[in-house]
Image 1 (cartoon, rainbow, N blue to C red):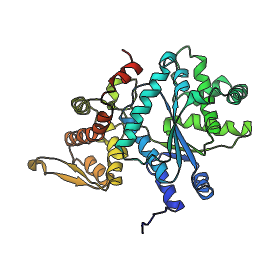
Image 2: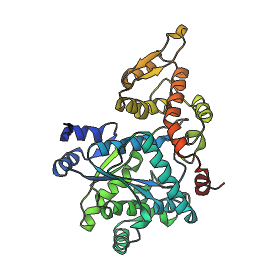
Image 3: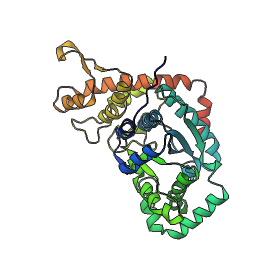
Image 4: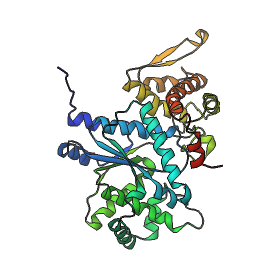
Length: 347
């Protein structure tokens, strides 16, 4: 007889919490797990730039939600992408949606995530609803320009003469939770101000605040945040093995944790994925430099690195190899779909 393992509330909570930076609030999350067998959660992905390796952090967390018996939705936020200073031109929205769905699906497959309770939704499919639009007007009447700008500042690009659309962005994100009937919104820590804006505004319309789960942002290869708009800071999912290795060799990799994208990728992606698959990380070194060394947890690796027991070049070589292992199945799934990428991001 097949034995089905059922996780208790603490196990489910711990799975959602692992590698997070903040949860608003942990007590609310615990209560939700007590009340609902299959809560609903989502992440919104604005369909702007090409997807890069920083997306592995949220996709691994999507897997955590699914393992913890959540029903999960990936919102392909096309209208948001256009509102953010037209990062996604209106005539390219359909093509961007196709690209994002294909490549995110390839990522999820590469990570071995069970997709039984996962679905995709497009913002345009419900954000033009009459009642949704009326609520946009209601929230617009309840909030000032300054309040909306503060909420969106970490996400939306505001120039010297900001467009009105950027101020509407956090209003839409607030309403998405309600109109998709979600219990939890998940995002990066850069979303914090928008998420607290939503918690503040839901009661004004008679809606309940949602639980918010946030993970850290992956530092770029040159320090600071990995960004789709900064070519030198990121590795695209379809970069060739040679380009991946070249970019990582040039990466900023100080003997420190802060602004170290190489070390952060090991912590939040490689070592988590190894643990989930009962694997260890092998750092290959010539015998004259101590020979190969194996790690089963990130904490020991970080300690050795900070104590100069692991050289930055050995770390880069290992990360290059591991990144290419993660990307290879994605490259294969996207073979023959080059036109899709070119249509979504015409030169």
